[in-house]
Length: 85
Image (cartoon, rainbow, N blue to C red; front, side, top):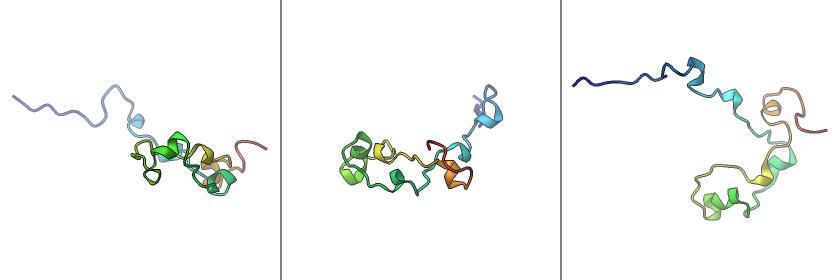
């Protein structure tokens, strides 16, 4: 029997849909108070972290550390302040 190999990008997907672009991933700015806050240790995201005894499967930030300073726009040096005043 011949070996059937599959293409890396199937015909039903557009070529640009194969991988998400790095620019679409939200990053923390690192300067707002939320980014600089410590992990709370009690939310479900913190309880999953190995430093709090979890398995480390979720890979999510603490719910108290969600960036409010603009995310990727602030990190890339774009327009200042995307979420708020």
